Amino acid sequence: DVTELSHSLEQNSGDAADLERRVAGRFKVIWSVFRAHSSAEDEFIWPALQSKQKQQRVELEQQAARRLSEDSIDNNANIQNRLNNASHSPEGGQVQEDGGPSIIEQEEYEEDHADEERMFRSMDALL
Image 1 (cartoon, one colour):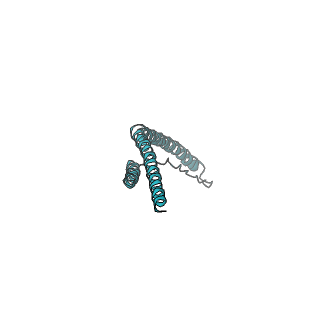
Image 2: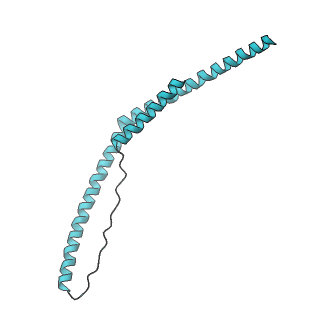
């Protein structure tokens, strides 16, 4: 009985050690993929996103300038019409504001990246 129990414990211990090695190995693969992905983000994706956001800001500024110019021309025409037709009541116009694109800030990106790195280091320490 004692011999069988000892043999069973050794076998279970070996199975647990094998399982632990497999889990640790898979974690190492996942972590290496994370690091490669993170490097790609830092090197390619983040700069491209920043460039695109700058381009969108410039386009929005140009649109705003055009609208301001158009509004100015319209306002001048409206004022002239009002002066010419002083007996009529003026019609009010509505100003429509477009929401700009969501802009990801560098600080937020770096904070998220640091959080992910801490999480992986903590998991690695546990394994």
